[in-house]
Length: 201
Image (cartoon, rainbow, N blue to C red; front, side, top):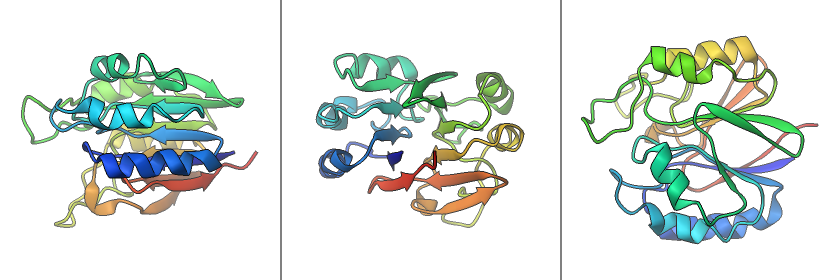
């Protein structure tokens, strides 16, 4: 299965239009959060992305809530918003958790969760599937512009325990496009340009 992965559009309409064109050549699409900026302009990119008719799995970033994202995609029939829950796409299990994990320094506007909350949201993640998270697992693709690691311990622990085949995240802009492996799991910090990943059957 070919999957188009992206994150962190932050109202970039040109990037959204490019992703729509790229989606024509894949089987599924993953959007790993931050379509808006501080809860503003969510429709800017989602109204464009709604032209995608391939199965699309989305999670909220820390710039929009799960409730806001579900409302904004209500008319997009191909899209499924996940946050602490899962779905199946072409027979593959997907699990999604959005928001900033751990808590960010950005203040009350940021849609954040602490590590204990994240552990609860990840508890039922199935083994061997696809995990979609806005925040990366700690010490993987989570190095900020100063070199500090900013990822989540709870997400990393879940990956070690459940070994999803693919983990798609975003959030840490300085590591966009980077990929690493953690055990059997391929971890991708997708970024807004879009990266196509081949998921082996």
